[in-house]
Image 1 (cartoon, rainbow over the protein chains, first blue to last red):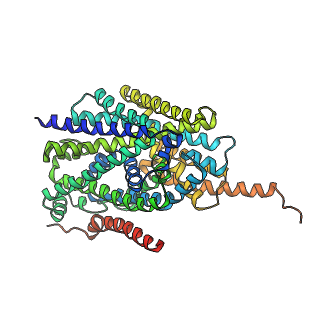
Image 2 (cartoon, rainbow over the protein chains, first blue to last red; image 1 turned 135 degrees about the horizontal axis):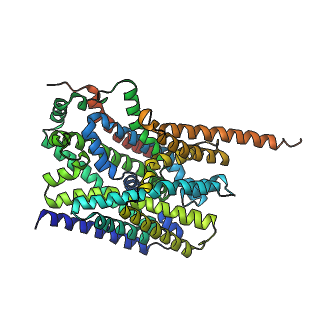
Image 3 (cartoon, rainbow over the protein chains, first blue to last red; image 1 turned 135 degrees about the vertical axis):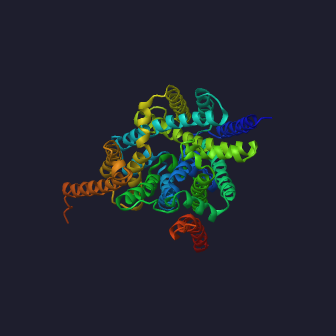
Length: 487
Length: 35
């Protein structure tokens, strides 16, 4: 049997497992709480690994590996940046978000903010839906495109065949099992990712002679590849570090990740989730980094224009491993992409069906109708994303540029402040969401992201300032409007 | 043979250990406190 046929077989088994999970989860899905939050029943392993798999897209197995290949050790600053984001999510947000969301009965992130601050005119909810739809709508389409390209590269399918094969399976299992299917499949996919990003780097580092030899051979190629500054000094170094460490600021605002904590079955599960997710993050981020470094030594020709450094992982897997094992490694790439798409698709669909249709427009209020509306939203948004990817509608991908930063700056400061202080008012929340998303877009469009600093850093800081300043003004005005009662 | 700066070893070995073992220590210590 040829290597391609074996890899195709492994991928087919992988896809069949995803559909099986979707079918099994669908049988357990009866109420809106089941469809949007898995009935708040997730255990610690599923909460931990599904949340981390959802947050890390194909970027970690392709982009981060390629970035470390090109820039050397200095590119690894992304790892502490992301892990600090994990710390903020897991230790600062998750415990309180889970308990408060359960107490309020909130099912989505806009739901949580609207319930917490009172939202009679639906301004917070509509803003939340707008930010989620603009950011995740394009993101889902872009990730569908990535799915198609990965299927094309791994299985030799045509691009439309790749999109249809990968995209249809994602839509089907998300539609059948909702949040439970997405969480279970993400757990399965996150497990494959961590295994791949431990096994591959160990093999490749051993192949180049071990840790010490890898660093010395890197330094022999270019001494800057083996330093943490990469030869940068002054403002260039500051901008580089702020950009990579600043990625972490986006984590506390990603709805497709935060809803996983809301779905944990109890507070004690969050404590176990913390350690599992942190260890997963360390293994995956540093695994990707080590793979990029050792790959630079093993395949230096990619740097000289002999290929795409972002394809290092699949190239090494095919070259070094038995096709059966290579198939599993390549499934890790599909896993990284598909776990993010399904999570984002479900969150975008829940924003439309739960927040917009049910809460704002007042339709599909009964349990059965709400689940039906959720499934319809997944189908419509999923089909739209598939069509956009097939037609390659470029304007949609424009929104992807703002997705991570826009969500991080619009939701992150508001959630952190609302869970840890009493400082915020409804108007402060609205001001922060508008400022966070607005500054992200303006900063990016002005080109300052490339010349000064990554847009999320100023957007996050200004949104925090806007939240506090407007809330304070709002409170002061409230006190003036209501004179103290007579003694 | 070029010398590898200490900061490189810190980044590649110490930073992952700090995050991983820090999370484990937090889990064990908090568990003991709660018991």
